[in-house]
Image 1: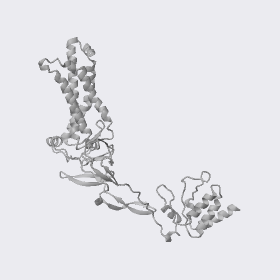
Image 2: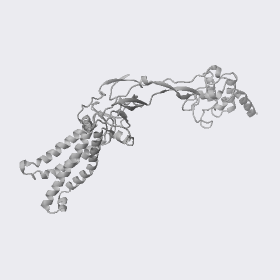
Image 3: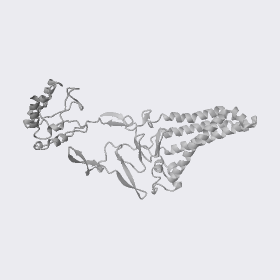
Length: 421
C-alpha cells in the first residue's frame, strides 16, 4: 500500500492547489471570466468616471471617497468570491465499503449464472429518518456507498455528496452547500450593490456633463465610458439582482435551489421551515461547521486486487445429459467460450491445428474430435478469435451444435466418410 495525502488520492473531480489547502470544482477555469466581469468595469469606472468626480464635492475633498469606496468594495466582493469557490462546500467523505449492517440477500432479485438462479446482494434504496417530528426519506448513494443525510445530494459535476446541497454554480466553479452558502449569498448581494453603485455615479457624471455641455447627447459623446458602464450594470442587475431576490425568498422559507426546483410541484410540508426570522438566523448567525475532510492528512491507498474468476463447476455425473446447457454454463459475459471441461488433451488438439494450418481439410479436425468424444472425454476448446474464419487466419471455432447431443460423434463420423468418397 502506498502512502498519499487525502487530496492526492481523492476520487472526486475537484482540483486542489497549495498542497490541498484550497479546493475548487472541476470547472474552476470559469473563475477567470468571473474575475474579468468584476474587475474590468471597476477599473474603467475609476479611470474614466471616478477620477473626474474628485473635485465635484468641495467639502473636504469628498470626491476622493468615490474612488476609495469603489476600490474597497470591489476587493470585498473578490474576497467573498474567493471564500465561496475555494473552500469545502460540505463534502461527505466516501465509504471504502458499503455499510455492512444493510447487507441482505434478496432471492426474489437473482442473477442467472449458467442457468442457475443466484441470490443477488441488495441494499434498500431508501430509508426513513425523523426530522422535526416528520419522516423523511434518505437515499443510498451507489458512488459514495452511504445513505445521504437529509438535504444532501450528489453533485454530478464534482462527483461528491454535499450536505445541504443548493446547486453547482459555474460562475464560481464550485458546489454551493452548507459550508459556503452564506458566502455565496453575500457575494451575489454585494455584486448587486456594486452594480448599483457604479450605475448611479456613472449617471451622476452624465448629469454633471449635461449641465456643462447643455444637452444629454453632448454629455454622452463627452463620456462614452459612462454610457457603456450604465448599460453593463443595467444588464448585470437583471442577473445578480434577480438571483439575490430569489435567494432571499429561499432563505426566508428555508429551502435550497435543488429542493425548490425538484419539489415545486409536490404538495409536501417543508419540515425545515422554522419561521422567517429563525430561518435567516440559521443561515447568517450560526457557526459554520468544520469540514469533515482533512485533505492534507496521510492515508494508506489500497492497491486494487484483481478478483479471482468465479466459474460454475459442472459435476462429472451431468456430462451425459444435455450438452448444450453444459456449454452455455461456461460462457462469459463477452460470449467467449472459456471452458468446456478440464482435459489434458487440449494441448494435443491445439498443436495439431497449428501444424495443419488454415488450408488443412476440415474433415481431419472432425475426426480428431470424434476420437475424443468416442472415448467419453470432453475436450476443452478455446476461441482464438471471436470472428475468425478459415480464409482470414489460422484460428478456428467450433459451434455449439457439435456438442448438441451424445450421438454427435456418430453423425460427424458418417459425414466425414461421405465427404471422402
